[in-house]
Length: 332
Image (tube, rainbow, N blue to C red; front, side):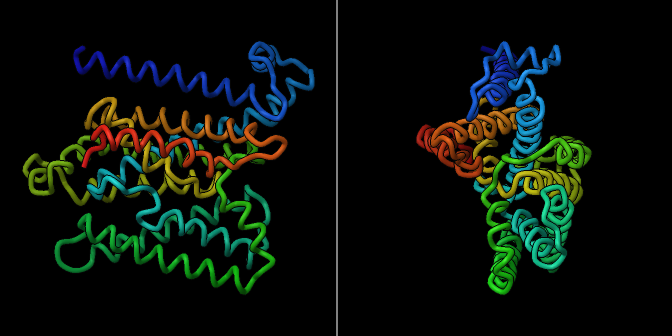
C-alpha cells in the first residue's frame, strides 16, 4: 500500500475510533445509557433523566476529555521534536509542575477553591516555568540546545517540586484540595471550563502546526536544518510556546495527566511515519481516544467509585508503548 494511501486510511480510522470513544464516554458510566438514548438526547433534546445526565454531566466531561487529550498529545509531539528526545513529554520543561505550583498558591494564599478559578493560576504557573527554562537554556554559548533545554527543565522541575512541597507542609488545609486536582481527572469538569480553555487550545495547535516542517528538519540535526533554510531558533521558540500553551490547557483543565504526551507521539509515528504534517494531526486524534477510553473504563472498573483518568491512562497506555518498544517501532 502506498504511503499516502496508508496515511489516509490511518487518519480515517482514527476519526472513526474517536467518534466511537465519544459515544462510549457518553453512554457508559455508573448509569449505563443506550446509544440510541444518547443520540436522542443530543439530536432531539429529550427531557428524561437519561437525557439530562447526558447533556449536563457527560457532554461537558467528554468535550473536555477531547480537548485535553489533543492538547497533551500534540504538546508531547512538539516537545519530542524540539528537544530531539524520544522520552520527552510535557513535564520535561517543568511546565506541568509550574501549573501545579500555580494551583497550590491559588489554594493556599489566594482563597481560590473552584476548578474554574484554578485554570488561570495553572496557566500563569506553566507560562512562568516555561519562560524560566528557556531563559536558562538560551544563556551561554550555543543557545537553547536540546541538552540544555532538558537540563534546564529538570532543574526548574526539581525547584518547583520543592516549592509545592514547602507550601503543602506549611498549609496543611490545602493538601486535600490540591490532592484532588493533582491526581488528574475529568470528574466534575463542566462546560464553563471548556469555554475558558478552547481559545488557548486553538492558538496552541496553530502555533505547533505552523512549525511542522521545521520539526522535520530539526530531526535531521541543527546544521542540516539550517542548511535547509529553517530558522532553528524560531522553530524552537514558536513550537515551545505552542507546546507550553497546550500543556497549560491540559493541566489547567484536568490536572497533570501523565503518559499521553509521552506515548501518543510514538504510536502516531509508528503508524504514519516521521512527517510531522501527519504525526501532529494523528496525535491530536489518538490523544483524546486514549484519554476518553481511560476515563470511561475508570468509571466502571470499581463501582460505585471512580478510578481517576490520570491513573487509567498509564495502566492502559503502558502496554501499547511496551509493545512498540519490543517491535523497535519507537524512533530513537
